[in-house]
Length: 329
Image (cartoon, rainbow, N blue to C red; front, side, top):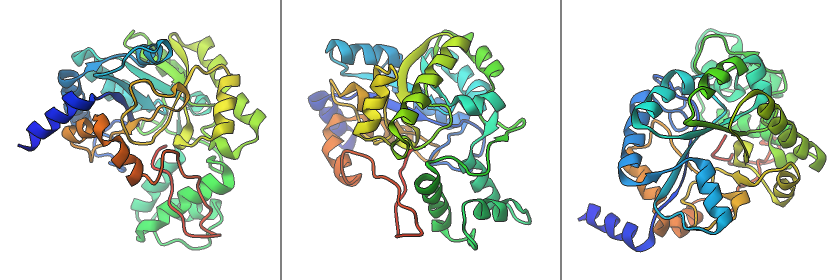
């Protein structure tokens, strides 16, 4: 009966949207964000069987042309994790699915690991100096790794006080799949024409917390560099951490973007504002069927209420008040 109700809702309201993945690898430390290869295959197989999975460039083209996107779903990967090449690409090939990979070029220049993964790895480890170094770097004198809210407090501090940039600099990620692909590795990924690339800024900052000109430069210079080094680069930005405001949207347009995608966790409208199109985050915790429910446009109002509004919430430094961090990275 429940399945019949969902099918009726789909037929009445339609469905469609964008799925946002991040890292891909076995036993992900952050399963709400990252996904294992087995779960990724199951999710993508269901999406392929239930919907018309199209390249993001086609979805954006339909928005700009005013053409219906009913039944259309696009697949994206933020941060160009090494696991996209190692694990996701064989699955995309087997299922014949296109995807867009958003690249943060400062990270790709080094094959750097991302600070949120480093912090979580250090939090879960025992007997290492990494956790103490991490909390000291962001100005916390003491932080108990066993308290669930500690990691959230660190994230909010980095966003609010350091505009999303780790204050101690970037670290090369070694052989781990939990790091950015290097530009050489991205060239290997680009050999498959199922893969397009998009803008994820130079340094992965919280854009609304930067001056306007710096926001423009983060996007424009990222686009220019990617176009010099890679094929099929779209002038589409995935706003880091899913954060944007009116100034950020204006900066994106000035930087040459024709579309921007967020992390607001709901289906797109049939003809959304192309500069603030929501995406649905997918991780190892999400059963394939949960993606189909969130792609149903009948649930958009309920998801807006759950997310406390249409727009993302700006981070608040936990030193000044309690806060909730944004869901996306």
